[in-house]
Image (cartoon, rainbow, N blue to C red; front, side):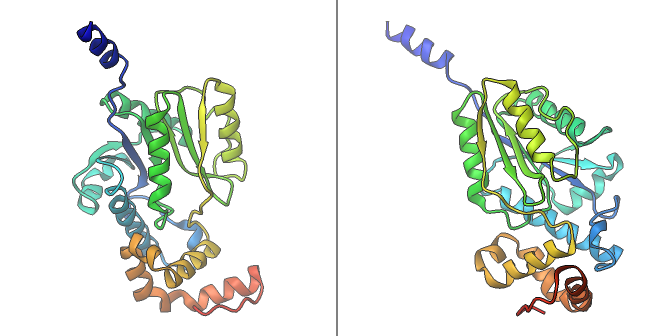
Length: 260
């Protein structure tokens, strides 16, 4: 009887190998941070994107043993390996973001990982606890889905306990409806334990960069989460700070800032 009980328990335990996929452009091989220009030069944009990538990968190590780097363009593999090193690399391939997300997640499950989470590299100071909360939810819910909304209407994280179809159907990417439409699709699937994480922000535009500078300047924990980014901003801030003042004046009003 004891052996029968053990067999039943073991047969119903899900063997889990949680993994997180990082969707990234290869700095120097793809146009990055274009919405931060002319505030940043092309070379500065590439450097900052590289800092974001480095800090993102480093932060993940404290939560995830298995990390998959899904990169674009496909011929940037050698370059991306020199930036981060030591992880699993897969090309993103063709298609819109939804198609590339589906393909990357499917490949991770085929490699024997699960649950699978996905993030980008635009939130270098993302708190560790958000990642841990998402991973814990997916590991404890067989039908779990997790999503982390951003302030601009997108999402910084999505994760699934098992393969799912239809999550990205009809989603308008890079819009203020992206997360809302994705959540609607998730709820329409049915039999889903959905976790919506706390809201965070992407660094895409000058106002986002200003927010990042202010956060790093005032929050030691943020500096610890993004040390490479923090060092780069300290070394380069004077080269674009006057342009940031101009952007604030014309688009956000005259706001006093201790940083500027």
